[in-house]
Image (cartoon, rainbow, N blue to C red; front, side):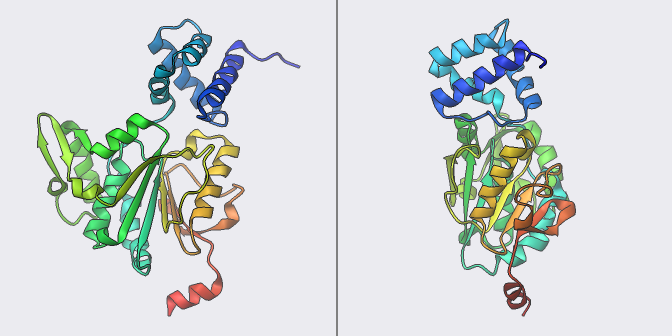
Length: 284
């Protein structure tokens, strides 16, 4: 048997310690991605070896949130992949209108760009007062930033371009005020939003929802954790509910593949498997 590298042993010990000490579970994250992010954290903290991070985390709980910032991906943009949001607007929304009330789970909301994109879209489609958003992440600092809805002004040009390409019905500037180099998005956009800590690796389903949007989260998980997360999404969706994933993610070849049917496969949107009788009733 080929002996394990010291680096792999250190990673194993570190993620096990984080789980046992703080109940944050990174054990089934993609090893390549996890190692890359841990190495960035190692450099940031100034340690010669990953084992230095282990000692720091075990004996200095205050450093955990800083490390979590390296282990979770917070880079996104509003209306990222505009074709996805156009498909939500033009193809998913007509079905969601049939529910008297709507719940949307933005799983892995990071700094909130995806949530604000959806909140604006739902407002423009007249569904704001009927929709409750659950915005979840494992990073407390990211949740705080998401709830604040403040972004650097130099990001707005890209946000606005995406908004237009996604079928926006006005101007993105209608939804924020800009001063002192930042844009503050209208607090009304988050009036019907709940921001909460939730870990796809260890927590259970917390509510039934009609639409799950979890984009560019699964790509950082290994197959077992992808299956677990997709299982949570399937369990939270009723028949006919919708799941949206990132451009490089899929439900195909997963343990939950039979739980979903293609809806807008090019835009990475699936529908919770629906009984034939329900499909006929909807068509009528």
